[in-house]
Length: 84
Image 1 (cartoon, helix red, strand yellow):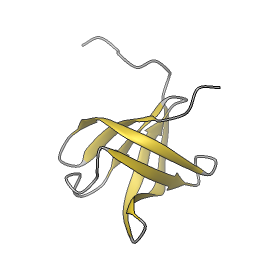
Image 2 (cartoon, helix red, strand yellow):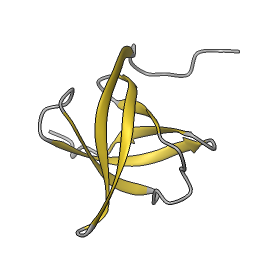
Image 3 (spheres, helix red, strand yellow):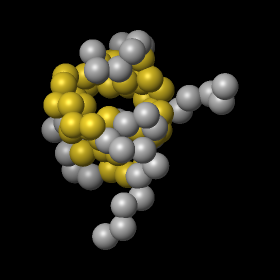
């Protein structure tokens, strides 16, 4: 299988929170992270919308993320950053 990642990912295994809306968050594990995206694990990915907010100690502040692929317990997402 060919590597399709833009940036090298670093293994993290740190706790995170996915904000679904202003009242609902889901706990997750930031499995790995790169400058352009993240892989998250959680018990149920179906509740995570295509665009969500991620907060974790391994990132500075919060990140708006967009789901690129989704499995039963894993999500691959890119950071939805504005161009500089």
